[in-house]
Length: 190
Ligand SMILES: CC(C)(COP(=O)(O)OP(=O)(O)OC[C@H]1O[C@@H](n2cnc3c(N)ncnc32)[C@H](O)[C@@H]1OP(=O)(O)O)[C@@H](O)C(=O)NCCC(=O)NCCS
View (spheres, rainbow, N blue to C red):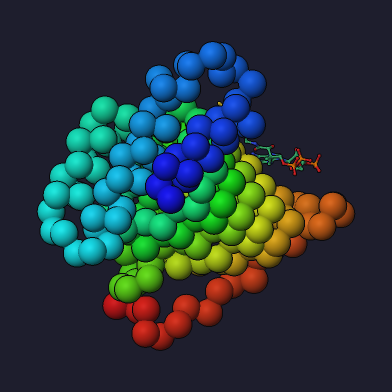
């Protein structure tokens, strides 16, 4: 199972990065970080304390990518360049997603429990994008470089850009929509 997922992660590099040649993929810090995560996430899930977090921090030292061992990440995940990425403990990422450097999937500091974003399948997140809170990003969404999303959901098939993020394309049509504010469930508030 893990082996198949890792094969899909490697295939994602060839699908998304025209610069990769022969076996250069082994040099990619994004792949190194996700490989470590694939190994320590099951350890975290069975409740092994400290060790998964220790290994994750060592991986962060070498790759610049910080993925909490608790994060759920689907197969075919591609991180380009790597440095500066932060993926929080309760973040969930679907299949075949792409993240560039300096992306944050973080909390607001005001929520407990589920406090990080949930990302659908086939989502592209450009460099420097910051997504905060237990928000939901739909399938086939494209998030532009330096977009900022705070406590708003994004529907399927949208392109969202800017600070704060505006939906500029939805289901192939040009639009100009402010994402509606998410109602934060009371139980997640600290
Ligand atoms: C958003 C993005 C994914 C393109 O998605 P798309 O659905 O093809 O959208 P378009 O290119 O048609 O752009 C739609 C509109 O958003 C604007 N736009 C695109 N990206 C933007 C960004 N990051 N910030 C602000 N506006 C942006 C475009 O100018 C366009 O505006 P217009 O309709 O007034 O002309 C892409 O522009 C992007 O930001 N990619 C990130 C790439 C990256 O991080 N590269 C790092 C390489 S090291």
